[in-house]
Image (cartoon, rainbow, N blue to C red; front, side):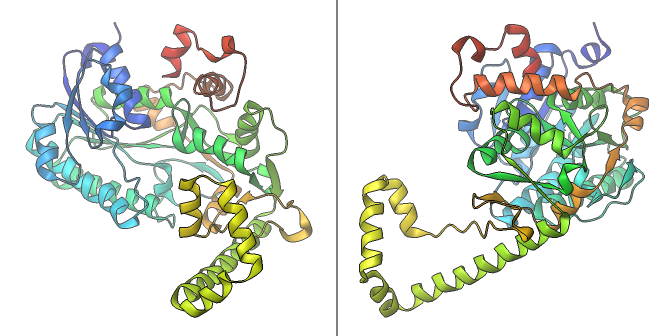
Length: 416
């Protein structure tokens, strides 16, 4: 029996965000392999299907409600805080990330928790520079709500460590990919199906990524290693790959070869700014038409608009038609400088993300190796093999032979 099995067996453990991508895989590990008495704070019961089959306790509640969090944490020795804000409303997203973290820290303090594992992100270091990066680097804003609110949450956790000696361990994962990964697997595939992805400077920047099971192993180690409290750990794979290699793996899953387009950083930024300008102009036109009923009536009475309206009404379902009537989708121009992009939709990147993609940053995991005994078990090629098996099984890659869709029992366990 492993060190982690011995340390967690029979322990009362709380997981927030346990119905999400990382939390669900963590719950599977805790319940099946670690023999822990796991409890999940469930905000939306409809999202709990993946973990409902497991021998766990589910408590309804919201991380923004201190009473719910205190009730969930009561009697728990270990707390894994995986919950984060996913709302499109940036104010709510920030509240979940910052206020939710504060509620967890307060509840852990009152419950006298022996360990709190807080999931942060690499992005607390902002847009990183070329070269090696470790935990001694300065933390700074990245420029979007998610990253900057996670930075504030991490600072809050560090403050509780200093002022209350709360036994918090901070994990800073890089891009987490694998089965059920919404951001770095599902959405990548969806974007490739609907357009083209930009490779900044040909995709030669470094993409630091970690397979989901390696991150879960790091979390379990952070919960049991006595030297871990008070420390922050970057968690990534054994070595980075280029953005070209990262995206090409997904392109190959789909059996495509034209989903990537090369742009210099300056070209990508120019494209973004042009699209933003066009979107702003069209938004003003839409507002003007909305505010001037006479103008709207005159436009709708023209033969051209009447013909387009009649044709669209025949083509689309009632639901899609209602959506089309209520909003205008703007994807921006698709002609980049030097005519390097075709007239097909391209998924644009904001300037900070462009700089992030251009950077040749190599995340160092020496500290996690030394203190947590963390050893990545999944090389990028193996992680992508398992990810592809799951994507086929989940019908994300299109039709294929039925025999290839079902993962084996071993692969199911490895892939999560």
